[in-house]
Image (cartoon, rainbow, N blue to C red; front, side, top):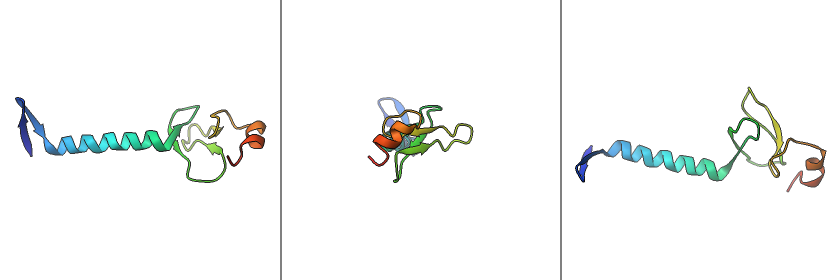
Length: 81
């Protein structure tokens, strides 16, 4: 499980885990947007631009398109962009 590299011992399992963690962070960055209120990553999987933060302590309602609090302008201008 360990491999010597330039005088250091490398745990192959931990190295693989670190690569998976980095790949997960990259996927989250590409497929989500942070809630404008609490910054938790939110994924949109269809439907209109009206978002509601899934975090129970937040529940901020916002527009996926412009990132502002959900309002009539968002509703009229880009409901289904």
